[in-house]
Image (tube, rainbow, N blue to C red; front, side, top):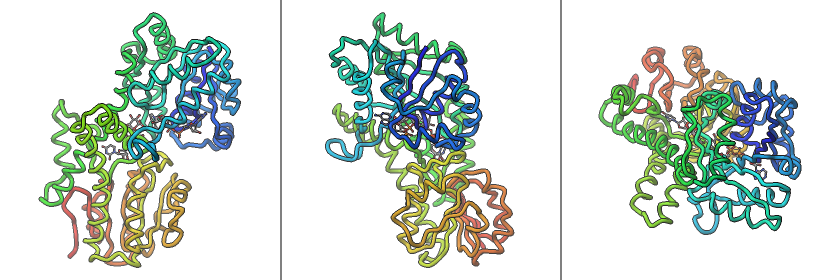
Length: 454
Ligand code: NAD
Ligand code: UGA
């Protein structure tokens, strides 16, 4: 079978690499309009960092995995087309700031009808508003060649930093299709790809609309958990309770569960915020303002958490950060990725900059993206991959990303090289607060009582 994926991003690239790895007899091609991205996929320096990805690509590339800019050929030769283009928040016109911007999806559909010469299965891999398949079908069937397309929804649940693990061993694979015989056949063809390595009971089939909506809901529920614990972290700081104790014990209830209850400086990543805002927009569109307001609060609490983090820094450091050096440990939105999209580090840096602090940003993988995100802040921001350099002469360290590298540093050495009193604001519950306090730091673990020397 010839499998094509349109969109060689964080999803298309790794997903297709794993499909090629698991199905050596299928030919998998990934195309993109971004020529430099495709060149990077074909080089030794892949365009995204993901543990284990380079090994999978090295095994399959130019065997049965091809990255190309030849979109017409890819479409002509494909039996199944996965569409994995970006669906960002629309920033103009009706629905600006909330609705999904579907222009890239529609352009893809128009390319398919321009170049296709036979019937095809088109798979929605991108995250899309519920009922997008209907619009997609209409665009595809506007072709004058009499071609037929079956639309299947197969949303992706991988998380960055663990993409290869998630793809190889998913909790579930969701495939939605129309309840017609052709629809069922198309679902079965897509399921057949996954059956090569995913146990049958984990391959779930549903109707199209449920599948599209499930993806938005899964992200909304995950983000909601994070905002719930983050809101309680604020109450913990006021009352002397410890958020880690509260969530650990609450999570022991099997109905609640222990995962995704880690308080922090806020969730980032390209999807949580955009997908919830999309859900909010859909609820408003369908006349459900109370439901929209409920979910919008998840995003509001997230913004509040990053603001609150900097306000706490300001209050602890005698209400002035002007001229003080702050070492930001981490810029990626989570560990094990170089991705900085919607990272809380961006909001934190901008607020610190507005306070006229000098910011030294340190991250093992995300410095290039950080420089792009902060391109307008030429003055007062420096970048280094070395945490010891970042902290030298600093008044405070703020831990923004939960990189393992930051856990086991020689904090005594770091303390000696810092301005005194030295502060550490742990926005990820990463370091041993007691040990750092013993070294001499004033420690502010998020959601926990501060350990100070005043
Ligand atoms: P991305 O921006 O990294 O990649 C999208 C790619 O599509 C880009 O390289 C872009 O150049 C390409 N593209 C856009 N229009 C095109 C066109 N007309 N023809 C060919 N290529 C085109 O985005 P991503 O992070 O891979 O996300 C893709 C989709 O998957 C989104 O809908 C997202 O919500 C969803 N998703 C993302 C993740 C994640 O972890 N990033 C996880 C699950 C789902
Ligand atoms: C998330 C989902 O986990 C994936 O299932 C989904 O496919 C993906 O979004 C998507 O649609 O893009 P991702 O954003 O890559 O994946 O990473 P997560 O592990 O979910 O983390 C998101 C953010 O939440 C990070 O900033 C992380 O630090 C934060 N987080 C996560 C917390 O603050 N606390 C937690 O307990 C968990």
